[in-house]
Length: 150
Image (cartoon, rainbow, N blue to C red; front, side, top):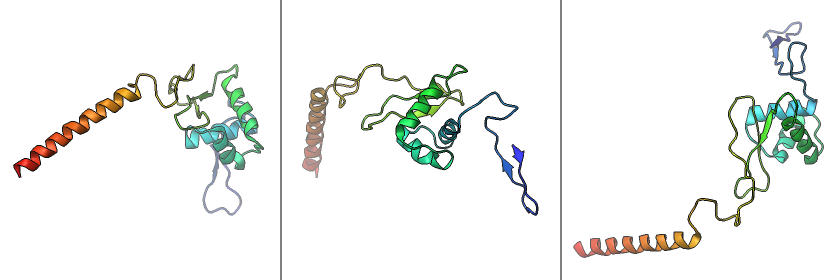
């Protein structure tokens, strides 16, 4: 941090130095800095959310510019700084997260599932339906037994 107090300032003010300084080894473009700062601040986000949130820090005109900057941050020679998370069910876009905390991202999908409504490893719809019908029938029998006692 660098002290940035002006003349007549009653409170000391500080400027955060994240990268692009003479003492650090990280060099990002203004757009890359804005994207990384937003990911650090708000957590995983889609490119559309990043374009909206990072607009105050750097000029990002469209989502394709954000996606190209994210691709650059993922393929830098000094190490990836951003990772793409697998697309969540019900969402149109994948989210991106920063890799500065050392947390490994969840495994990304390599192939889309055969049916988006059925996740891998879960029982088929027919099996689930028959199990639910059996459970409802058992609950009805218990309810009738309780009514008969009263």
